[in-house]
Image (cartoon, helix red, strand yellow):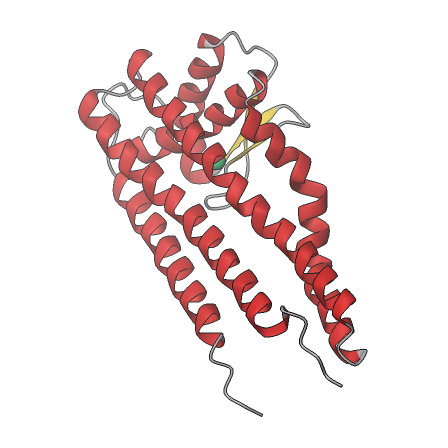
Amino acid sequence: MYFDWTYIFVIIGVIITGIASAGVSSTFNKYAKFRSTTGMTGAEAAQKILYSQGIMDVRVEHVRGKLTDHYDPRTKTVNLSDATYGSDSVAAIGVAAHECGHVIQHHTNYVPLNLRSALVPVANIGSKAGIPILLIGMFLSYNQFLINFGIVLFSFGVLFQIVTLPVEFDASARALKLVGTLGILDDRERKDMGKVLRAAAMTYVASAFAAILSLLRLVLIFGGGRRRN
Ligand SMILES: [Zn+2]
């Protein structure tokens, strides 16, 4: 055995995703204590944003859990978590408005969102089967075809994470604009909301970066047609 120095990539990935998720938790918790001057809840803000865009067929619903907020285009529901749905905090409104940003992307056929949706099936297969196929290739006396195939599959999962970035940034940009124009938050509150959304965006950046590092590691270890005989 030799020391696998590329393992450092895995450690870096774990550290940056850990820092990002701690960052979003602490930022959310901080601004969850800042009540908005309008007193509007996350659910009310979401409803107002959707109506303002003429979107009448998407329901705003309550979902259990912490930071489980999401928009589900199949059921046409904006699902807001315990800390968001009934809370009138700046953080809650920020998260609710962000999810509405995704609804608007869906309704306006925002290209990166469509690309991301198209990648879902292959990304799912890639992140589940990529490594196992690579390992099978390893055990079959370093079958380079299977190893490369595993890496290519895995890279679709990485690509998905990269395409997620513009989708997330855009949803937050739409949210920040709308809470201002609709008078849901004032300028100072919008600044704070921006901090919450930026912290949330950093978790996606960190995940994407960690995924790129994992891919790079696989390429360094197995790529380049390593010969065993
Ligand atoms: Zn999002």
